[in-house]
Length: 313
Image 1 (cartoon, rainbow, N blue to C red):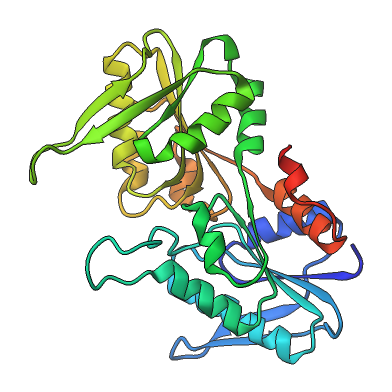
Image 2 (image 1 turned 135 degrees about the vertical axis):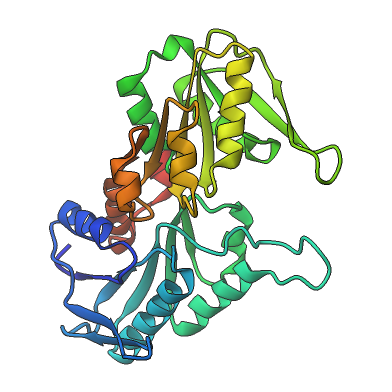
């Protein structure tokens, strides 16, 4: 691993440090700061000529600032004659804008993909894209890693699998939930969320028998936390013993943390793809697990030109 260079923006320095420790390398000295008018300035303070370089940068809040940092760091590496530039984006922002939901709406995920490609990135590594087809938005190789192995390990260590049921919080997440359920050999249920008329509250229908079960809600993103909390209530009202949630990306915007701590969720488990805030760290029923070993191993295999997909076999 002495032949690679790891660089970190300001989005998630703790994760970058953990990945570097896993790989047994030091982060490349790189200054990413702001001028008085908040214009971003980047200076790479080590030689990277002919090197295999990896920029670790989630495009989390503030999404636009962190995206610009990634683009400018890429340009700096390209002009410094780096041999290959891989953008390691644990959380890919704008992924929820992957289609036109209405006339004259943008497909922002495609725009961001174009920006990253045109800036000079040669390859992208990310985790649990909101929609798998976003890989096709890039005209460069893109590896979409899965957080499931990290979650499965944690579930096996902490829960009695004989009484576990995996739950998809909506119909759209069934494929993701089914994949995790298969790994732990657990049954699957679905929360069907409907709003019959505009302005009326959502109706939660549970498809499957959850009575007496320890339920695990599985999803890629938790933002406001509303759907998660409502789904937990619906499951408990139908006889579930307890409800936990395993979510890859803890966006947790606005009052989400307060909403979850006061909810009936026994526990919310998120990964460190987004750097947890102080509110998340002190929350009584929110726990963070690390994807640093997963990301580190993927980076090592990419550098050695080995299979990344075999990580998930």
